[in-house]
Image (cartoon, rainbow, N blue to C red; front, top):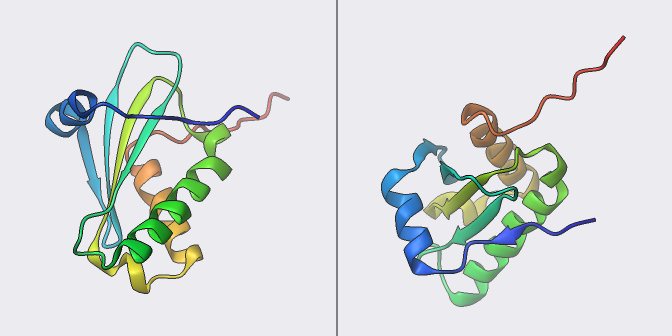
Length: 117
């Protein structure tokens, strides 16, 4: 299984923030920007409003795990910026997973697996 690549440079993150499409949920915000690349790159941001470094890292690991699990259903050729919001600390893993699926569906990034008959 191929791992999802990460957005690493600040110039790429700034570009996605300025020119991307925004979808919000009470637990997180997804900003998506279409690229000509054959891969999807992701960056997870947790601000200090989330809590201590331990809490922020825990939230990042949860979000990355959700994305890694659903990477086969996410369309390629996008740069994604996931910004955790304050109330995500109190949410369960299933609630965070549902929120992520919600914003991915609303942004049109989830592939539909249609069967050919």
